[in-house]
Length: 97
Image (cartoon, helix red, strand yellow):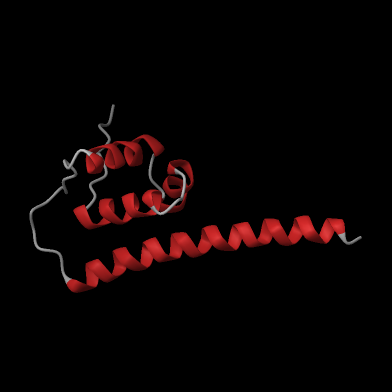
């Protein structure tokens, strides 16, 4: 029997994930986009609202890591927008036939 290890996330990654939810994306959608479990993201949002969101490590985060985190969040937002536009296009295309 093998013991599975838990994924560990930086505080910046958690904050970016929470920003997606607070920006209007659903927890399910944001979690799917980021590749994390919905319950995990729900817990982060709850902890953030209580002022208790913490990262896994106390190491300083490099500028590159912060940029990667920001870009991942932006990519998730852009993918969501693309999906919405694709669905809208399909909807309106059906009506014009």
